[in-house]
Length: 416
View (cartoon, rainbow, N blue to C red):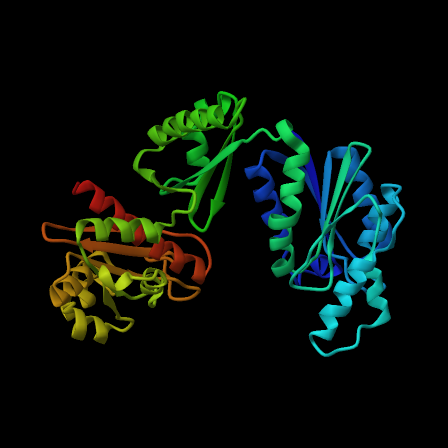
């Protein structure tokens, strides 16, 4: 399997003003095509830093792919340094000069002479076309090493990599590009350490695969990579191991790969012809937003009551004043009446009620910040879950909304 090293250039990446999304995109596409990324470097617009990154990349891998630093200005150093470390001499390519002149002419602007720098390439290089900017890329293969240069702006980099660079790379790699397969198994309920414990037997003996756990927004993603002798055998290995993992984690698994919790719940509701309505207090409409962010949600989502005050709970959800006075607005009893109230008022199949203390203030010794009650009412019953979340206000609200969706998911599945 070919190995790749990624270099992301640009001082703005080090200052934190710009996220390095390019290397993530490149890594994903390389893996899909059987090329493994062994390391990455992020460097500023500094000659020595860029040179050191390229040299390290060429020592560590077969392919070095960089993004950024292909512009015409003095701090755009990437191409010059890449050619230097590959012992390649650049010369002016007239076809690229004409392309640049045409680019500026179509915009009724005079081309600055400094842009001629972007038309300089080694004779042995493959020039990667850029239809969205002035900076072409470069594919240079020499002495069993490959350097690929891509522009920094993602809107220019992505199509160039997919349409120009990747086909050349795959063709050159040939049979060395063993196609690995990857699957992300998404889990909600158990935490990362608990998932690790549940999968300890598999992690100790992954049968030729690799496993990685990633905690993300209250979920745990189990990333499984299978690499067989060919594409078909990789798929078989992946399917077998995924089945073992799913068996261990049970109904904590809510989806795979591109699935989201909202999309999974939406599909379940639509498949069964059911509708849900929501009564939110501490989440302040966040659950409703998550549901309606998905196109077509009107098919299964009636709507919501954001009952932040006690008066709203009483007026719109029929939560009894006596209930609030005796047990408090944050209580299992109030959550139950919220869920039943929204369901009775709307006539839907499922009613959800959420009440809690998101903080940072409002907590007490008996009812601390992070205490949330989530109720789900249907035609047969009303269940209430008491949750104790940890984190800031936004995190507690997000976890509350996600947990409500997961309770609904599990309830629908339990009904067959």
